Length: 81
Image 1 (tube, helix red, strand yellow):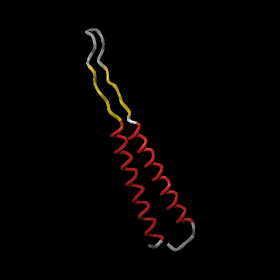
Image 2 (cartoon, rainbow, N blue to C red; image 1 turned 30 degrees about the vertical axis):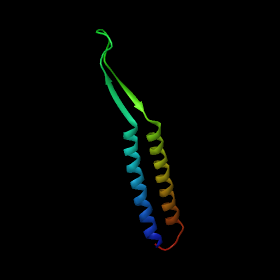
Image 3 (cartoon, rainbow, N blue to C red; image 1 turned 180 degrees about the horizontal axis):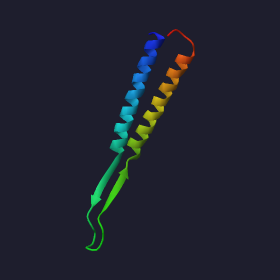
Image 4 (cartoon, rainbow, N blue to C red; image 1 turned 120 degrees about the vertical axis):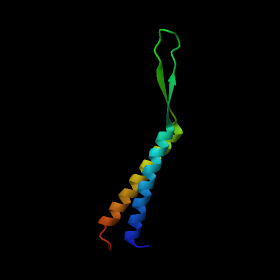
């Protein structure tokens, strides 16, 4: 595989990793609306964060960052373009 094709594939994988990270993050945050417990109490919204989904999103962002760093390294190495 040529250097240029490798860079294109890595950039594509980085974009895919970011898109998947956004999806994972959205799956990891859930909100619930609760009715008032008593007549004089206000209603409220609770937020639940799932560590597994948030952790997966974080790992995917790290992978995407490493892919972008490698693309820049390959470009700056001075090889054939």
